[in-house]
Image (cartoon, rainbow, N blue to C red; front, top):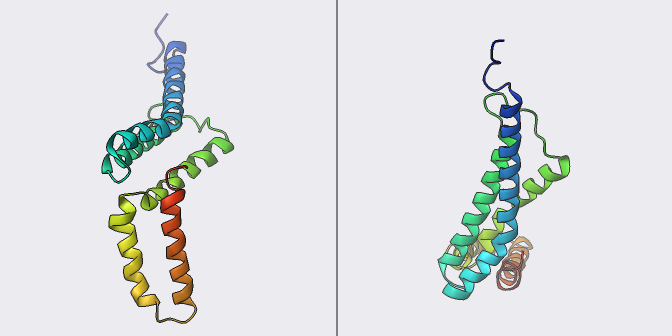
Length: 151
């Protein structure tokens, strides 16, 4: 009998499923290990160093890349996403949390905080808005001090 076309054998289907599962597990493992990697780098290089931030961002990016590849794995005509709606919502939440990097040292001290203070010079004279903006900047500074390292 003739051989089936490439990609249609049971072995090919199982290999794609195995690759998808491996990518998904790798992405989840990286997401779990990110705080540990960041804490080790922060302990070794200090809180104000760029290295812990870069380690954390690299692990986050690798995790999201693995999960994205797992969602889209399957060749030219991938099957519909096998991720549940809860898993897709969680991946969206993780992507949104990437914005917290703007509140972490040293990005906050060197990029975000100067930009906030620069915008504050223009907003300070505006009644009500200037006061609210000043409070928002104060909250962002507190978040940098207390929360940005615990999420």
